[in-house]
Length: 116
Image (tube, rainbow, N blue to C red; front, side, top):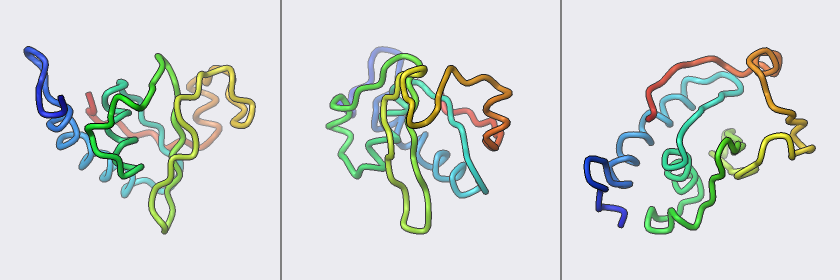
């Protein structure tokens, strides 16, 4: 399944080969918080990578529409802190439907990259 693309699409293996180097570049180039918006497939590939899971287990990861994942990065590497957070429901993060102004207040670095 990982190496079998849908008609007119790309396989998850091809998606990982395209997305993961860009993800690593964005993380390396960030000096603070970073917000990346992506489709479920992109998110699941990144989460598999962080967890060290083979792509064959990709569909064990759930990603609801509009969900948020929180990834910590420090000198020890990356750690998935929260996954599949439904906005307006996570009190621990204080999330109440973020807006552009609330994101700017939190100091999220603004970068544009083509991940789709």
